[in-house]
Length: 331
Image 1 (cartoon, one colour):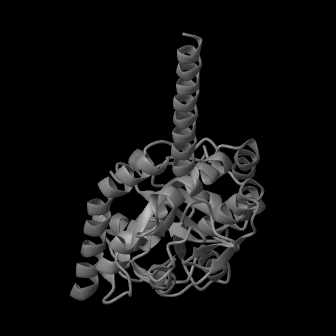
Image 2: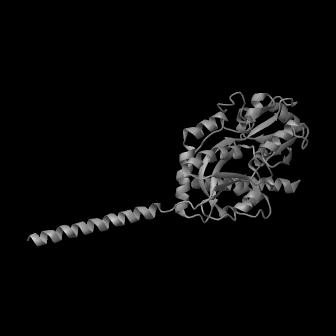
Image 3: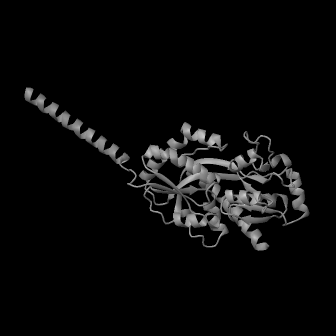
């Protein structure tokens, strides 16, 4: 009897050991994905200094401490973002090659012939922020109000120059949507990033440009630039004195969203590791303070939410690009 009892206890111990081993292996299988050795590189397809660039650089500093790796931000500008995205289409799906994921991933392949990439080359990781478009002029501009600006555009079709961050870029499409809503015409001029349009406007080479309010906050504070209107549903808390288009009976609300993307073939485990790290960084007090200081908005979405959001936005942005392309062809 005693012998049977010993055998029973030993059997139970073996079963327990096997179960624990299986659980450990299962846990290991669920968490065995880790980033390979090397730095994380984040590609920004526009020039340094704009809202997208600033956002990613601020985030990179925080992520470095979380993943214990250097996070290098590279600007590969040209053709409104196509040059950078074309390079990103050939990135290794190893978790070390990330890039800015914005609406231009959908619009540039529609607006440009053979941009070197397609939306199917990429997949979203997480969403970081959103900002509306704004109409910006120099402080010494002859246009003191939105009404002044519209009146001049109506009297002089095609004469008023508006800068953007590249044809097919969200700021180009925002200005085009503004044109269509009012039935007026601008002379749109592309640059590689918001910072270049700022300098061109300050230098008297542009009458106006479209960008997000936070991108020009310092120049507005210094008195070098002024906002005539924001293209949001409601006034912004940090720019409460600036009217919306809708207050002027212009039914248009449009802007940019900024996320992080990875190559389409990136393994699910690697995506999970990156999602966890970047989610922690975006939700951190340090990043919140960084964005607040620059009057930039955080609108976090995890991988599942951002993927659903991007898919739902795709058709709208592709239609905007098609409209802009048709307008260009008609000229």
